[in-house]
Image (tube, rainbow, N blue to C red):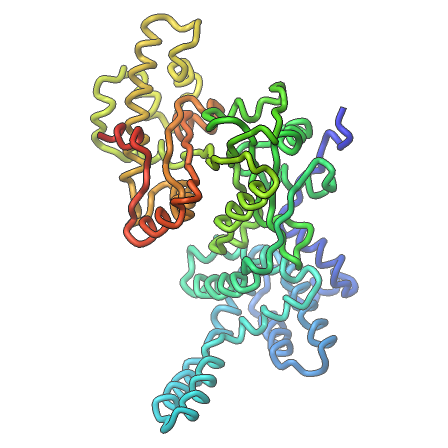
Length: 473
């Protein structure tokens, strides 16, 4: 039996958790009284009350304690609003607390009229001050509050969806993203190894945040943290109990080609000291509000450095990665020559939305003993066609210079090479629906990472091993 609990509490909605944290860190009295002051939908009549709170924060009167109290009160006001009220709050920030155009024109004029280098430097400094929207000065105040950084991260998680519908909110989102980017610079982050002895509260968060291969039980989690398996995460000093991103690693011999083998709880544990290969098989971003703030590439490099310092036998670093966009891309193709000789039932399975997993699974493993000769032949044709199509997808499907597949783009940006495509590597419903059960190994050759990174970033060149290129031809 595990020494952890076998069940977890129901997950709280995002803003329920946020409000609970605010109450813990910023005790401001009776929340019901705040609701009476400002309606939860923030009607027009209450906008002036919120504006007064914002203006008081920006005025900065009194000492530091007063400034923090005002910021905490404003955060409490925001958090007790309903969805409609929170959106109206952010629309007020976006519309009324942007850069002042009149002041900007004046500052530009002063810079143009500057007569010497000193005057030009002074004018440039004034211009920089004017270019910072008042809302950024406001939001920066939350950095000084306990729990304030997490509050702003959660705020942006909700803002991102609304920003797709509003140009003004998109501008606010860009401002907040830049602010968080400066707060979450890689130099501020701490790498920690997560083990079975880590607190149960943090382990519960790993279960919640795992986005690639669902953690189905505490025993499943224990299997991923002990022996020849390990997990690393980045943390921020102002969010010490909240992982930002984590990666799960298997220490094995040779490059793994099946996720089911890596996650098999019944498989005997290997000896990490004897392993020659580290397989990164799951990378999960934990904070939706940090979308666009990139530190995943640094995570892999830091983990590689830590592993090699402790396990010098490790020579190969590879991923076993999903291909989440493949089936969607395939459905968009009007002509698919690779499928011409494939059985019509198999093609129909692929074209169905979503894929009929039971139907497709019969063809997924042509070597299975229960399959008849006809099914085995159909499965072999399907396998060859899909391997060719997947290679074409990974090497040629692009958005501008970037790889169409978001996972491919991430690893190629980091300097990896497409090593091989693996048939029937993920036979879960999700794996079949996203990529017809295939997965891909991205190889991190430490001697070629920079070269591959530069070629992809500057020219869109995708590095791939010869067998993958041959599939396309």
